[in-house]
Length: 231
Ligand code: OAD
Image 1 (cartoon, rainbow, N blue to C red):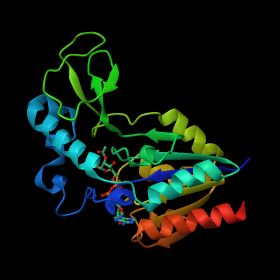
Image 2 (cartoon, rainbow, N blue to C red):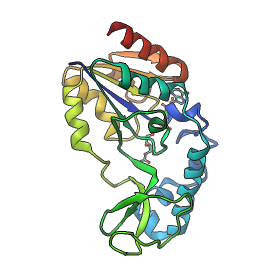
Image 3 (cartoon, protein in one colour):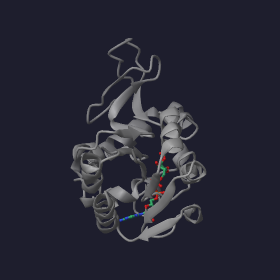
Image 4 (cartoon, helix red, strand yellow):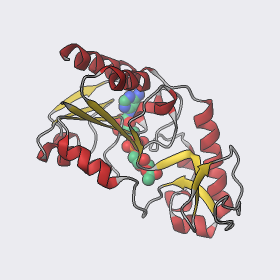
């Protein structure tokens, strides 16, 4: 059976109106990463961090999945082999169109995490500092987001899938943040054919066998159609 592993980044949601991290007008441009995306930033000013993710949660809730998200869900439903989507995105646009074999390696905006017992539950649209964990009762709720300096989720499962992949595709990711930026090299070492789909070549673009350049809403449906045609 053929196996496809797909890594997605902010670029796949850009045409849904969710700005990429490095876009000059994004929420990120108004904050230092250290302040809003590290455990130290949260310890220093939890209200700022909780509010930052409240805003991002609202933006994601207002966005609609686009043709690229839909094409990946179609690929999973119709491909004769196995399809795994690993996303660095914290929005829920993949699952809203039916992707099921999906890993949110950097967490999810619609999830809350207890910093004490690691219990997870559905995040309310507006989180507040000091909310209590429904499992252990500690006043230790935080956004269920992997911050810089923390370990991304499900790395064993991801590396296992990369080691068995026949095709690896990275879609709309800048290749600036590890470990995800190392996935192409890892899949390549294990014998997979690698493809980068992006507006432009990424920081690790030279590591891919092929590139498909252009907006994801055009390139991803084209690529999915070609895979499904080939069987
Ligand atoms: P970036 O904002 O770093 O990169 C977005 C990528 O998408 C760039 O390579 C763009 O060229 C590409 N792009 C933009 N619009 C596109 C479009 N319409 N079609 C196709 N490609 C497009 O986002 P990520 O690579 O996802 O980590 O960022 C990786 C991680 O850095 C994030 O998960 C986050 C961030 O800091 C954490 O929060 C831990």
